[in-house]
Length: 142
Length: 142
Image: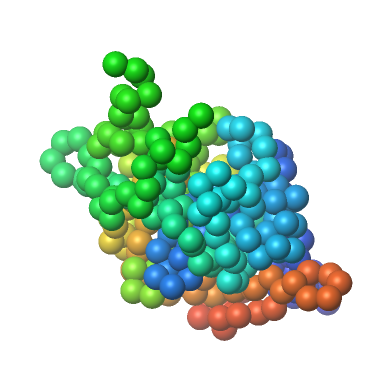
């Protein structure tokens, strides 16, 4: 039997073996379970992933703050997890969530509120679905 | 005027200033423009992003092969780009694509063909939307 005919466990197996990078993280994409809109791209370490699975609410790891982070702990805008999927090489997860409010710290429903416009000359951005659900200054005041 | 009332250019401006990480990459999420399904998570360096914008077809950067990679160059399954969005801190892009065939090198439409199942005891995976559109052995034969 050639090794090429062996199933690739990581890709074809049913064992969950998330492949954390050198910083101990996997990439996580969160989409709205109802609208399928991409809400945010963030990272999870092993503990964030464990808590997300155990609690059914999204936990992330903030690279800038170097801290575990329960989504919505400040804003109240938690994400209830409907489904968790993992990709072929198990270094990215996709969570389908029911968001209660905005995903973005700027107050928007999604972090992806700007579109890349390739016209004549320079590439520019334009706003799309950019209305705010809350005022970040009021929510994240110190 | 306090600095806190100044608009944050990276987040609120309309200038496209992708924030590449230490390895020169941004994260890219590709979704199917018709079904909204998440197809894959990959990376783009500056050149992959430039070519994607210029050509209207998805280019990525393969970290494992350390090479620029036109999606579909081997399989023929190119991705026509319908829209490109960028997130609040400009370190992730979301592309909505019209895929011609499979996104995943395993032959599936999406790389996310396994669901994480948290039952009693160990966390396991189960297959979902896992039918193959092509036989990877036939397409990627050497």
